[in-house]
Length: 107
Image (cartoon, rainbow, N blue to C red):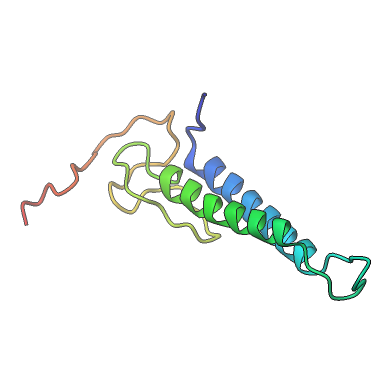
């Protein structure tokens, strides 16, 4: 399976999975049934939505990383053009000039 390389695209995919999980949660919490057409719940959809929400967080933590130093990037909705760890652009096709090694300061 080919994984996405650009962390900006991975973050967008994580946001889409999160939105889908929240929509499933809302639909499962207000699922009309024959017994109660107004307050029915579908527990399968609620559990499925919780699994999708957990998977979206795991996806973003594993894939929204700098392609040069592999430090996790900001998961908030903000512009992430430059990695705060190494100072290189997060575009994986752009060559890295000054990659810091993790824990390179010796402390």
